[in-house]
Length: 383
Ligand code: FAD
Image (cartoon, rainbow, N blue to C red; front, side, top):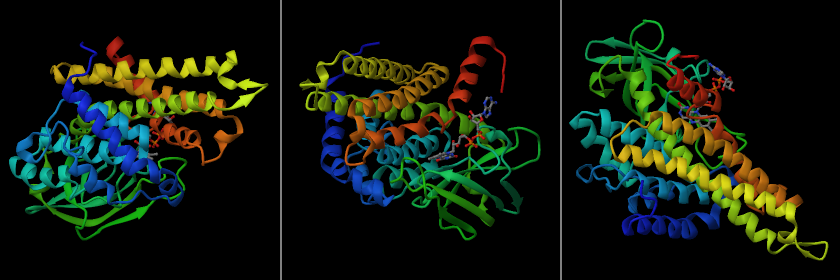
């Protein structure tokens, strides 16, 4: 793998860095306190092509490789994980899944809207009773003539209250486990679909996380994404690529923690010298720096495998596992460097720690990533 960025990759990274400095960083504290990112950010993201990375240009995408996607995701995560999550879900989990599984008509209907930021997508898999064990979901879609009628509840859905289209997973027959699950593209304004914002999150406070309730939601059979009964495979293939995006966002958090901690250590004086001159502070900084590099290299490897058309699922689980745990460690170490000031939201590191914490939980908890890696090593499923 060539670790040097190409001219194009460096240009897109710089574009994202400048965008974050201009449009995100000045508002981060206010958005976090208000529990609301300004929605106008979505069209700005779309305008720069960040919602269309890796999507073919014929569907309104901006093309590009997966390393470019990682670089942009890292810069967004370095600025604000709430903004990063909007892209990771609407592009990473929804648009890219439509590219892989959608009919020509579905691609033409949704991709230009999603990549421009005219529309936002959300990914509706988790339910109150099924998180890690997603294959046992209870939402049902029953065929009725040319339609399906859907009933059920989805929870913790990122972009949920903002979304125009829900990539929804529902059971279409009663066979046990995951075999009866199908995927649907459901317009969010379909009668019978109601949404409720989930407040009080520890982190990612700016993000519109929602519960979706579906009561006799009637959707045409043309909303089925991919073959009936293939929904669980579709969800798992989406999440495998999604994990690279989460890992890249975690690298962004870890890098932001490093930048902030190094800067602060060079300014704050205790015992008559800047704290950067104390050896134990240097230990905290060097621990963060090694984690940043290791997480980034694991993440880039996934991008490289995808771009070369090779199997990447286990590598994505390793990158997501390591990068998410590293992001928590790095933000926590950075907070230690800040001392008491790290505990106050005028300084950036407390928010980094709160935002990092969820990364070990969603798109498969750390335990689930270990089970995926263990299954690949042994050939035995321990779920
Ligand atoms: P559980 O599955 O109940 O797990 C509880 C604990 O048990 C965990 O420690 C877990 O690791 C452990 N555990 C479970 N099974 C095993 C096992 N077999 N072996 C060992 N340990 C096990 N979901 C979506 O569908 N779309 C979204 O956009 C989305 N966004 C989210 C945003 C946020 C902010 C949050 C918090 C969650 C989001 N989720 C989303 C849901 C997320 O993916 C789930 O929370 C996650 O999969 C874990 O499920 P759970 O919370 O039900 O925990």
